[in-house]
Structure formats: structure tokens, C-alpha cells
Image (tube, rainbow, N blue to C red; front, side, top):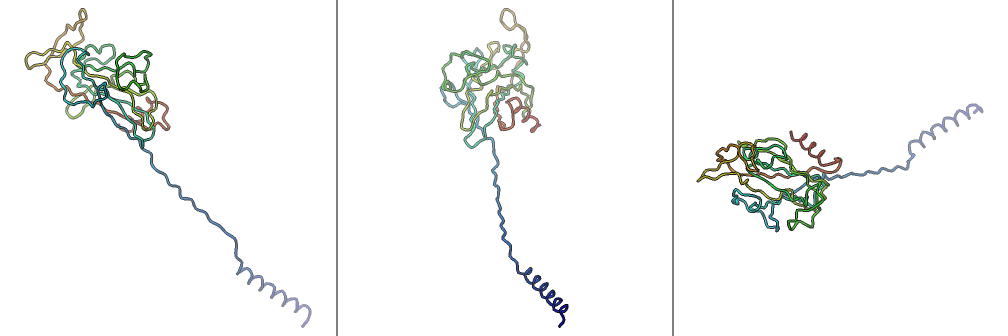
Amino acid sequence: MTKQKVLAVAGVLGISALILSAGTLAYFTDTETETNTFTLGKVDIELKEYDHQGNAFVQNQKIMPGNSDIAVQKNAIVTVKNDSEKAWVWVEMLIPSALYNSKTQTQESNNALHYNQLKTFLDGYTTNSGIATVYDDHDTHQWSLMTYVDEVTVGDKTYSRLRSTHKDIVEPGYTTSPAISQIYVDDDVKMVGDKVYIPTGQEVTNGKYSGSFAEYSGDWEVIVNAYAVQAEGIANVDDAVAAYAAQNN
């Protein structure tokens, strides 16, 4: 065998060995997997009403024309439940529109049906109401003054809608101070036999209503609704109200 042929054979053997080696190589490898599990957060609140002593509100109480001295105590409070996210909270009250003539805070005296809030818990006040309640250990001056919003229809009835907002975020497990304190009938409302007459205007002479009256045969139902929106990602309670309206209208 010539030298050139020996080299050629050696070359072929070398290539064959290389191919065989390539077919049996094993590489070090590794794979890791992480499964990300998320739980959906929720907002969960509870609305309850009590008197000043903390007793549960009694439905179908009788109300009489007079003044706040004979008012029905109706402390509306909101609890953000333990399993809830922290939330912005507000309360809305619906009063039959026929009983709520005024649409501004300065003419509340012209309404047939009134409400009160305790200034102990009203934002913007530095003094307290001087009325002892079981809620006096709560944060004070948190609720906004109840303000007229608009007219709404529930079933076949029209109501004036008013709103009070809680200034600060409400944490899980916390119960607010009262947003509303009491309800009472204006002393201008007249009862003649079985008929009830309510003021229809805003005329006042020497501190007394001097306008016309109309017979009223409707009910005196007041509806209170509480609302909450997650605090995360929302700057303040007004933005929360707007976000809720945008999502539900």
C-alpha cells in the first residue's frame, strides 16, 4: 500500500469515528417551571342601622309631625368585612320626592321629611354634637354633609337621592361612624282627621311656613344604600363614586 493510500484510509476511519462519537454525546440540561396562582380580591361591606345606644333599628316605627326632639334614631353605619379589600365607602339616602321640596342645603327647612347627621362625625367640623352615642370611640369628622344628587325611580316611585361620602379609606374589619343620625317629620305637616297635608312651596313668614299645602297619601319610606369601591388605584372617594357610576350606568 502506498503512503498516499494509507493516509486516505486513515482519513476515512477518522471521519467515521467522528460521526459515531457525535451520535452518542449527552449534554447536561435543566428545566424549571413556576406556576403563578392568583386569588381575585373582592370588596365586601355590610350596612346596618341602630339607635344611639347601639340597639338594632326597628322597622315601621311611627313618626309624627314635630321637630327633632321626637325624631326616629337611625344611625346608618358601614362595616368593611375582614375578608374584603380596603375600600372607599359612601351612603345614599332616597326620600320620596314629594316630601323633599328643596334641592339645596340652604332650604332643608322646607321639606316635609327631614334627616340629621351628627356633627361629631361630619367632615369640616371641629366641634362635636354633644349627643352621647355608643359610636363616640369611632374616628370623628369623617362623613361629608349629606347633599342632594338627583331624582331616581325605584319601581313606580320617584325619590330624591342624597349622598354622604366617607373621607378616608376604610380598612378591612372596620366599622364606620354613623353617616345618618335620625329622621323626623317637619312641624308644618298638618294632620286633619285621616288626611295628611304637606307644604308645597318655600314661603316662610316670621319663621313659619306660609305657603300652600297639598294632600299627601303616599308612603314615608326612606331607602338607605351603602356602596364601596376598592381603594387600590383610586385616589379619593369622589373618584371612587365616579368610577362606580361609569361602570354601572
